Amino acid sequence: RTKAVIQIQSKDQVVGYIKYALNSKGNIFIANEIKAYKKNKSIYLPKMLDFGSFKNRKFVFIENILCDRRLRAGIKNDSLLKVLATFETKNKFRLKDHPRIKILKSKLHQLKIFKYDEILNNIINTDNKKYKVVSEHGDFTNWNIIINKNKIFLIDHESFIKDGLEKLDYYHYIFTDQLYIKKVNTKKRIQNVMEILGPDSKSLFFIYLISRISFRIENNFDVTKYESSLKYFINSYLK
Image (cartoon, rainbow, N blue to C red):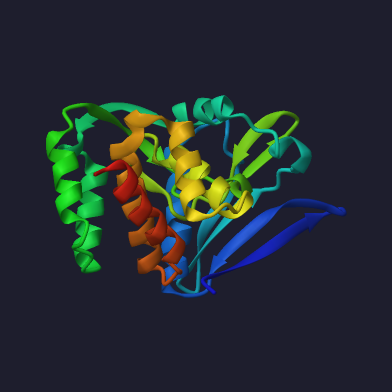
């Protein structure tokens, strides 16, 4: 466990939740969340009521937002893209110069993950398109979205990346929907994802998958289904 979550009540109503770090890894996660709220003044975020540290452990206090789970199940992809557009900046870079790619390559080498270097280098050196820098949520999923009175709120910004790459959050939502909610097999999962994202998404989807694998390895999460998805994707769409 990296953190404790404490529910704060007043007069029988839930005011909000305090996340309190339990160790150094928790400090990193809470620091990321604080950075996300400080950097983004989006209407799609709950309010950060307070933040700080106690006994060298960081905490953040976030307002409570009631969730209508029935509405959350019916979120349309266009609505998700509209939300994500509010976290875009005006800065654009080619992939080889993009700060998010520099972060990813450094992390892969730090973790001694070299087997994807050839494909990654080929992609970033041949793609001349410029991609936006965004505030990347890092875990943009169905369970980190709250719907209240038909308004979307994003929660749990513990994997926040300040200089993120456009579309990776959206790809994560689509991929995790197939993996954890629809629970389809590897072949069907990748086929469904590519049908939704379209053929022009191949380069960024490869980058998305290796970024998730590196994140999960760094945090000691199982990578089996992500690696099998990547293997099928490479064999079916990149060869």
